[in-house]
Structure formats: C-alpha cells, structure tokens
Image (tube, rainbow, N blue to C red; front, side, top):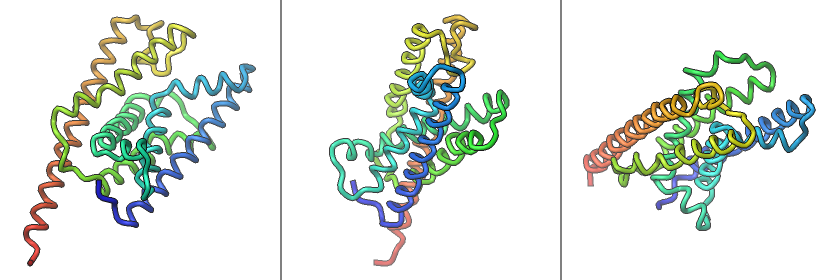
Length: 223
C-alpha cells in the first residue's frame, strides 16, 4: 500500500496519541471506581474490557498508530489494509451512534469522566472517520466485504454472553440477558447488526464515490 503524505501520517500520529491517552484515562477512572466500591484493581480492568467502546477504541488507536509509521511489521501491514481500516471506521461510527442516540441520557458524567466519555464516543470517532476519508485508498472496496466485517461485532456479542454467564453482568441494557432473556437480546443484537451492515454499505458507497472522483480529477489534469 502506498504511504500517505507526511501531513497525513502526522495527523494519524496525533489522533493515535489522543486515543491512547483517552484509553489510559478511562482505565484509571474505571479502576478508581472499582477500588472505591471495594472490589480492587483487577475487577476494574475486567469491567474496562467488557465494553465494545473500549475494544473498538483500542482497535482504532492501533490502526492509527500503524498508519503513522513508515516501517511496519506484519501486524502493521494488516492493520492498514483498506478493508481493516474501513471495518474499524464502521465499528467506531456505531460506537458513536449507539451511545449518542440510545445511551447518553442514561447517565451524566462530570469532570474527567465527562472528558473521557466525550473523547471515546465523539472525538475519536470523528478523528478516525476523518483519517479514513483523507488517508485510506478506497479503490479495492467491494460490497460483499460488509458481511465479512461483521465477524468482529458477532465475536463481541459471543464474548459478552460468555462473560455475562460467568459474572451476571452485561455492559449495555439491550444486551442484558438477565433482564430481557436470550430471545429479546438476540433480536436486539440482530437489529444492531443490521445497523452495522448499513453503515458498512454507506462507507463503501462513499469510498466508491471518492475513488471515482479522484480518477476523474487525475484524468482532467493537463498532461
């Protein structure tokens, strides 16, 4: 894959740094809350790793870090693939949409909690989407990829159910098996999965439009 210009790598580096700082801040706040409730550090880490928001922001920070570096190993080359970056964009857009449309009204954080909350659910999705738009080549995007990208949210769903079966805790109200039962949670999960597919198709359509426009611009330049 062709290396992006220096200014775009710098943007990716700054966005990655903000992402890692935000993730560290949220981890610290979660551990503090766990200690305050008498459950200790490792319980805080366990809770921290329960959230799709956290896992997806970790993925986004990894992708941005890889995109910022000139030299990449096998993992870095995988992370900067067009499909992987677009799947990450899909997932972090869902993070922003679900939280801001469905969950934001459920609590009112203050202070550093509000800072971390808005960074994870607003700023980082916006920064990653801008990175995707400016830096990621779109010519290889194909419509069937939208279905392959659902492996990540599907794996998360299984992960949440397994964790919930162990400790009885579910991170999101629409996945709370204890309150809703497995059938309702499965229906809710299918609805969210449709939203993932819809966002993926929007990204692919935008990518095709951007690729066509870039081709037309290059063709119109005097030779």
